[in-house]
Length: 409
Ligand SMILES: [Zn+2]
Image (cartoon, rainbow, N blue to C red; front, side):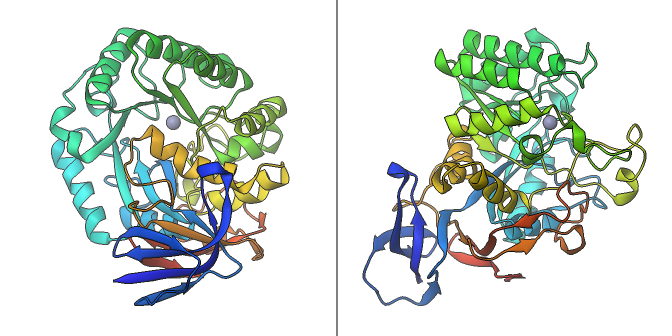
């Protein structure tokens, strides 16, 4: 089966180029680029549109198994497609947690069968995320691409060292949710103390440590120090930490998340970190909850916001206003996460790479509303946001899965 994506502005990561090209797909792989029109079984007209490597969201909570009233694999993966996301890394704080072969195989097989976006898996770093017991990742290695106790960081430094030594041996990254729980977890220092420790332990072990959802200016400074000293540390930011701050917080739980919204100087520092290339990825930290769980007063409401299907529209709109170029923004959803997670054949438009492709229209304005979301999680932090662009096609393995407002099946 030969598919031609015709006439689009193709966003290459190499040399920051955007070129008018046709893309040839043979079955599920990109097989060439041409300015000629060739005969194909299927033609996708991308005139006036921008063609990107399929976006990767490296931080999502699909609540499956365990809390299916919040989300499940099917609704989560469909929401991803609506957001132009072709690959999702799911976090292991499910019930039961993702730390044994049976649970992992179940998720892996069900996601394969759904045949929507690609689901990739982060297993627990410690057994059932108990923060103490190390277990052998080798048995599950085939099915996972990272380990994390996300929701909590590993508090004990010796345990962290053991986890990192295993990660190094097996060539997988450790994803760290940085909050030192001996402090009030919402103060800046709780995050920064653990970021500093992760930098030190990455240096000690040489293991790849990825800091999740950094939210403070000083966390970024620590990461900058690590990168400038060739320490194997990467980081991600979430849309809410780059576009919102503590002045947005209301009396209910609408803007309650972990880490919390910070000060304006933190937010601006993160935008500048993206500009300077110090931040490797943007991820949603998609955390769907029921309305009942979020509409409580601030202290009682649950942590987290839903975001997988709106993240890319918000980020391209806002970051272009901040002066970032299309290629730089795209890298945070493509090349950046693919490199951290060692994803072969993903994150770039190149011959031989997977035909995971996102096509956007930068002239299609739309308003983001909690009322018309695909996700079960209506708890978004950007209700009413005016996006300057929309996702027109989400293509996974050469097949159109989302087309201009409709899920294809
Ligand atoms: Zn987290």
